[in-house]
Image (cartoon, rainbow, N blue to C red):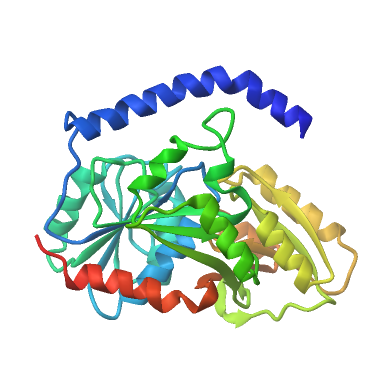
Length: 355
């Protein structure tokens, strides 16, 4: 802890310089020197103040499941770490290198919606509407800082174990903007909460966040589903205390995931990489060796849905070596029975939307 505080102190001047640049940019938007565009279709943004790990993808999927049977949805992401540029529509037969892991995950799970990637959101939304004229709303993934688009509902996620109120600007901390930027949000979600949380803790966090009168505060957690075999999703795996797991993942934070697995199985070993890391042949060989070293009769490899999109690039080898890779799906749920209240905010926005 002392070492961490020292590093933050040494990096503070660089954080100040970074913060000055952020403040100048936001001042330009407030003064109207830079414009935030609105569009003829409803736009909902899901983002966070920090760098990665807040759970944007499962919350986007929550909104997809909520709305897809009622209106024609499109999602728009940057396509982080993809090896292409520009505006692209995501197809099910694409790979993660072309369109990014999270957009490909959306398209594979929800093939009936439009999924797009582009660096410039303001340019991409008109392209989406021209390409698919029946598009009735756009979900922006990781767009809290992309102020060129003004969403109708701005949803801000902050992780339970690392709330923005306790964090610092880059590079001393993980914040991409000053803490005060939370004021732009319409909805604030404390994400990745424990499975149980008391009313007293809820009120303490509410006092810490101090939501403004126009803001609604919610608490969400992950409900993990039964893992499925990567190359045949119909085959499900039941987790139990006699199972040994080798976890391979390249996500921003693994504590929440590992805590869950440790509560469900006999043992967990992990191979962890930087967020959105593309597994190379050496990584896959190491995975193979590490799995073979686990000296038990019941053992499997588990990965996340996002990582499965990148592991698929090594499909032939994984199938040839008969590596039992299972994908752990997750769904967002809300504490205190407040899911319907969140749903109603979204519905009312869509019902009352005017061009």
